Image: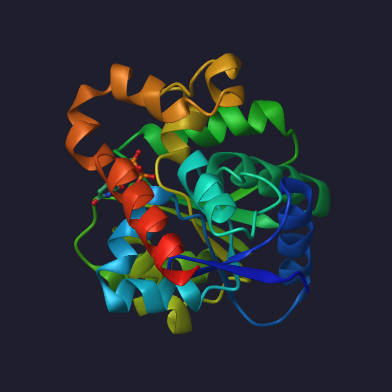
Length: 242
Ligand code: UDP
């Protein structure tokens, strides 16, 4: 098992994308069900003010640092994580694994039609992948959805309801779900479907993906204030602990 690093109340697996994918692969071979989450600065800041959300995130079997904010925070505390592991990339690695190993996938989340489009784009990229089921993320009755997932025989469940809804949903229903691995992956289905584009590589390399998103979706400005708030909180906390 890889070491965990605690950053502002959340314990992250200190893993590269490759190592995270290898851990996920191991989880798929185990009988029990597993939960993976990919907190970024926004969720980490939320969790610092919401004990229950913090507890849920820390109870996950795999917690990766999604986003440059958490990576910088880990450096500020003097315990740097190896790498940023974006949920959307981890999700894609798992889809590739699923195609290779014959594991069935269920896509839950996003607006009607988006998950279907995502599945068809992913099927082109990973021929042979089997989707056990697909359902949009705007449902009323949890029990119907759980039933559908369990009847589908899915091994892997993508829960893309946005944070923190997806984390709360997984924690609440985890014991009823017969999947091996469930992952909370926010807007990943939009990204696979192509309805929301990821930033060009140069933005990603420079750690400015957040800035690209801000320009593309100015509506998110309010939510994104969590990033500077998180950074300031981390700096004060790290100074206090020194
Ligand atoms: N969503 C959903 N059900 C809801 C609320 C949101 O399926 O009740 C979906 C939404 O359509 C979008 C995703 O959740 O596909 C959230 O995307 P966002 O980029 O906001 O995710 P985050 O930034 O939280 O990763």
